[in-house]
Length: 334
Ligand code: AQP
Image (cartoon, rainbow, N blue to C red; front, side, top):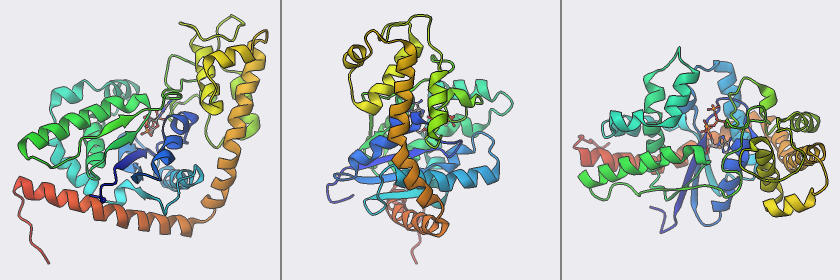
């Protein structure tokens, strides 16, 4: 579709303030594709409403997520940055793909099981069919790679299954995408319960480091991070708290676990926690400075949204139209 240029697609839900999990597991890696891929990065607000949202907060976070994409180095001239609900083809293809997705396969999705346990009073159909809309997001752009954290791997796999099934019935419709998961930072865990993923919607704000937390808050949160009763900074089975801190330190510094173990030999957890807080705060400081500039310019962000939605719609509508034709929908021109 893009003169032999491969395509990268991914998205983040504006369902809370973005965390270092979203940053290390996903957004930081988006820019690796900017030079050699045609890139589409989306603020997936339609996914966010599978859980109840306060409208004013959803609106604010939608602007913030776009500004953060840009502050994390995604140049809107090299990447198509846009908001999902502003490109209606996502919802349209989502409906079509619902008819090519099996109830049984959706029932096996671990995110559905986790989120329905967390939101037992609102197990809506959208929460169940979330992976189908995500498949539509990806397939609309004939995507080759989807940079995501490991928690989203299962959703990319079901997307591949849906696309393969569709292609068997209607050959050469969709490109089959591959998930691209970072080696380091693929799953950042909660600072309070290190067996649980760090999530932006966690009610315990001390368990989560947000990209926009100030330096003192970041350092305080790491100082309070739950660790075991040992003292040695060593990566080992069952030491979930220290393993998580080592993963975060490794992701920000590029060091291996062996290098970290050597660096902190003879020092205790206290020194290490402080060091993790400092590298995290140092890495996020330039992102936060740039973010402040972008978020104060609403007109610029709206112009970017408009431009992104126009670009994305052009490509999305081409795939949608191809699908509709293959299915036998009547298309009248003009
Ligand atoms: N803790 C994490 N470690 C590594 N990667 C993560 N991602 C999320 N949390 C971590 C990656 O961030 C991208 C965007 O995620 P999302 O907004 O689509 O939804 P999510 O995976 O459900 O993220 P959250 O923060 O847990 O949101 P809520 O609390 O609303 O459910 C994805 O690529 C994801 O892998």
